Image (cartoon, rainbow, N blue to C red; front, side, top):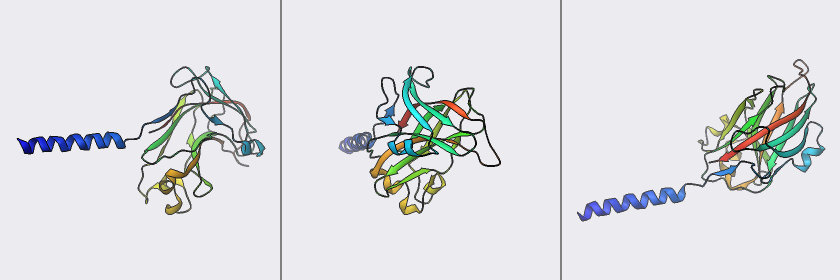
Amino acid sequence: MKIWMIFVGILVILAAHGAWCAETPIHFDFESDAEGWAIPDWALEQKDSVGRSVSISPEQFSSGMRSLKLTCDFPGNSWASAIVEYQKDLDLRGYKSISADIYIPKNAPDGFLAAKIVVTTNGLGQWIEMREALPLKPGEWVTVKAPLETSPSGEMKYWRCRTNEECIISQLDKVRRLAVRIEYNVNVVKVGPPYKGDVYIDNVTIE
């Protein structure tokens, strides 16, 4: 009987430890304000950075009743991006993924716009971005998801890094900015129509 009680006690302790170690999800739903998200000052000075303003909007949302609206001005004849970032430090140790829901209106150019999740780290003083941008679909919500829990040998499949030692896993406690970047991918051969309009971001979750 005593052995059984000891066994049960060990299970309870292990379960409690696991619950204590599990990180509380970080969630941005933009129901009342921008929650610390903004276009960075440096981006407003770059010619190929075309985000113009950020506001809270009830026009589109994937959860709740509002989302973050990023107003952009893509020229269509050259690569350009619009970036919005969470302008506070984060310690992402223990988290497994970052995701964000993104919507472009039906009148947005089809086949040109895509999105990435990007982090800026203090340890390296550089961006670490997703290796592949996820295409966006006019009139539909698309979820962009970036894994954080990957093996050191596999993380460079998902993240654009110089070396494994300088990639996302070793920098999780040094995240200074978390960003969503919208890209308009064109070149001299593949030119698209200009798009002066909005991109909606909602349900940004770190879990």
